[in-house]
Amino acid sequence: MGDGVRITANTVLPARREAVTLVTDDGLRLVGELSLPADRPPRATLVLLHPLPTHGGMMDSHLYRKAAWRLPALADLAVLRFNTRGTVSEAGRSEGGFDHAVGERFDVAAALAFAGGRGLPDVWLVGWSFGTDLALMHGHDPGVVGAVLISPPLRWSRPEQVARWADKRVVCLVPEFDDHLPPAEAGRRFGAHLPTADVVTFPGARHLMVGHSEAVLDAIVSEVRPDVPTPLPRTWSGPCEKRRVTIVAAGQR
Image (cartoon, rainbow, N blue to C red; front, side):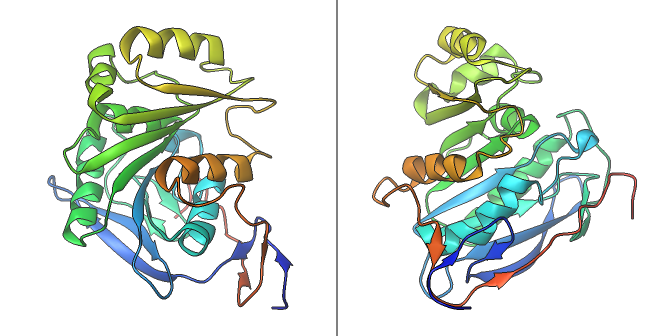
């Protein structure tokens, strides 16, 4: 494509992309994808934990496909995204069934083991909605640098699970109009159990962050790669593609 192409929701920037299978300790095979910078080693790693699959969350949820399509090229990040047990997307269905954040502990562990086995550097968990609870409940691991929590509902995680993150960097991106945990309540609850967390309000945003993708990606990069200038580029000079993803409903396949 020509010089200075605007980066849109369907723009796929260059990267080395690989379909991967994560194998859990309880014997399930999970569908995933690893995206790496096209021609250099990654400088840090994002392990993405998606929103609630019973309400449409999956590895193709809009923030996560944009992260995988843009951040290897714009910020030298490795991006690992996958479907938790029983979750389906265009890439396929992970084995097993939704387990209310209990069995999903094996899914998080499998993703972290995969990142460790590949030698991926500076692993950060990025949770979104349900995925933030998975991060807080099951992601506190010696190999994890910190966590970025997008629209955290604090629905499944217990106070003691939140509190143990005090030894790691945690930033919470909270929509102004989140109907699950609005900023004032998020500040109160994180203040009570994890006062070291930064709670950042996203003005005008709602729970799914529709219309705020660029700002969310900027916030993630600012945390994980503070040496990379933000806002990230909104145009791209060089080869790229346009792609549309087929959004697969939970009952399909």
